[in-house]
Length: 112
Image 1: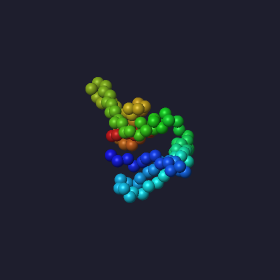
Image 2 (image 1 turned 120 degrees about the vertical axis):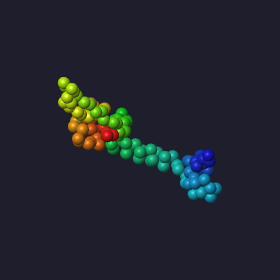
Image 3 (image 1 turned 90 degrees about the horizontal axis):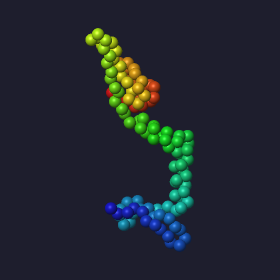
Image 4 (image 1 turned 180 degrees about the vertical axis):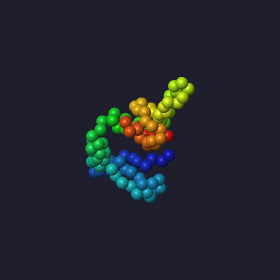
């Protein structure tokens, strides 16, 4: 695979030369250290604006993966006395006739 970036230093400007495509006559842009720092700081600012820790972000990412609900039956004297669905993350039980996309207790995305 051909590289799209390379170091650039003409004695006045130092940075990374970025090609916009693989052709020889592709548009080229020089990204200087100042530009690199700005991009990194802008990304950091977006992250900090969330007010979340890295652990909280990973938890949200995990919670957004759908998990199947667990269906439970309860019998007494050979009669069905209850039927519930339970969230795998928090264990909260609720009526299976209510079709939730997310657990009302913990917010886990649910797969029916």
